[in-house]
Length: 132
Image 1 (cartoon, rainbow, N blue to C red):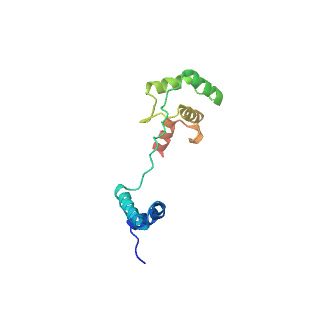
Image 2: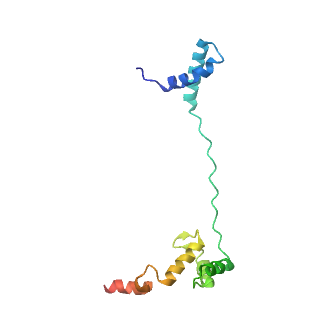
Image 3: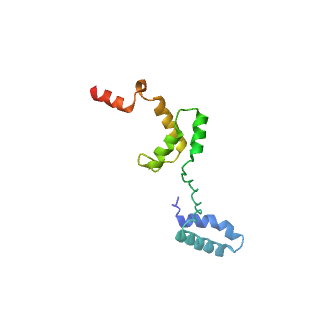
């Protein structure tokens, strides 16, 4: 069995469509001409959809933070939260903040001492690690 080239493949696929409109000899020639053209041009590529617009972070208002803290029933001081992140340019570490509500939840965990043994502060943990 003969190896089918890309040209033959395209010609075979195009031939039935061309036969509807032409005589057999012309149809074969037309099919190979179109196959060569398709190989030269390349297969049509789908138009790329423009990327979805990423919603930019906008800092919350004090009222939004107060409402969220009240909804969550935490002991976070909304004014301290706003002052902290406003003074730092709404940056977490070296990265721009993406979700201020997640930052409030992190403050909750820090405030309750979750994730730290016996609710120790970070300074106390460092002292314990240094003495061990």
